[in-house]
Length: 219
Image (cartoon, rainbow, N blue to C red):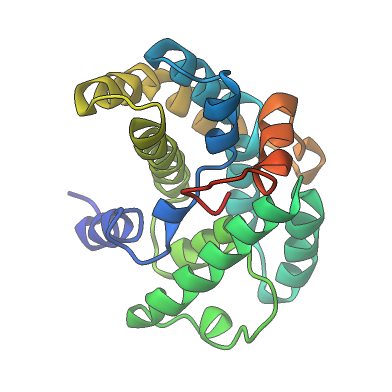
């Protein structure tokens, strides 16, 4: 094992047990389920596939990779781009709240730029990219782990919302492995000009979520 300590760190950071609060967000799925757009295992596979290929996970991993490579004085501009790219107030809350929680939990692996960030917005993928670089975690490994964790969080929300059984949720995760790998590879040479999404239904769902009469999730 070339870098076992780095692998252990990455597994810890991307674990559902790492206290980022990801379990509280559905990324617009709650609205999509109520509307009847995502009500089956097959529909969930399609929804997650689009998030990976054309949606926020695609965008997030580009930001993660550029944060990984960025000098400290480049981070503020990258953060401003990430904040401006959020498609709704709930998406912005989702990424900045998780980014702040991630940075706070990461104090066990000291990184001065995160520890001294203060109260400014810190989008989640940027926090992950900065920490991974500082702790010598391979960039490609960090990108793939982020994609896996993101889809796992969507699936966990859908299992509770649709509802689906755990076996169905695992089948969805398995079905998305190739898409996760493809997105990780496609983002390796993506520039900031490639930032953007084409997942309009999911974006509209996230915008409408705050109007739902009853909600289990924050987004």
